[in-house]
Length: 153
Image 1 (cartoon, rainbow, N blue to C red):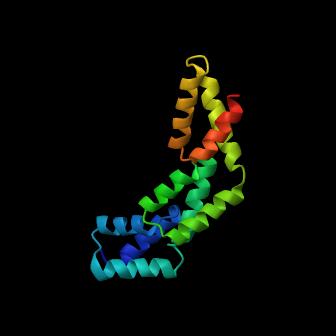
Image 2: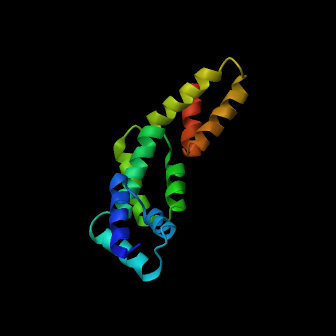
Image 3: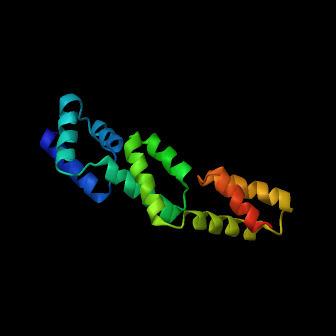
């Protein structure tokens, strides 16, 4: 495969969905583009606006919060796993704050979880399980405790 063919293929790959640098680098390696060609293709994609980690981080954070109901802790962990810079992560977290309803999302999630299980468990066990669920969704422990105090009073 030539460098130009790889560039066209990766342009299509990046057009379909926002990608981070790590995903694009892995894709290039999987189609056996290495060394200088890899760096040139990556550079061309950045220059042409197909590859932008800040845009990727913002869209990722906004989508995971709005669609999956993830908290900031989990979003940050996933972005770090994708080797996104701290600067881009900070910008992405501003998106989650501006989205609004962060604590309301947590409260709705916890209420739903508790309502489905309130007949099965005693109050202490239910609180423990709901807390663990909130942590697994990536919300901060102090917010989970505050919401559980309101819900279970």
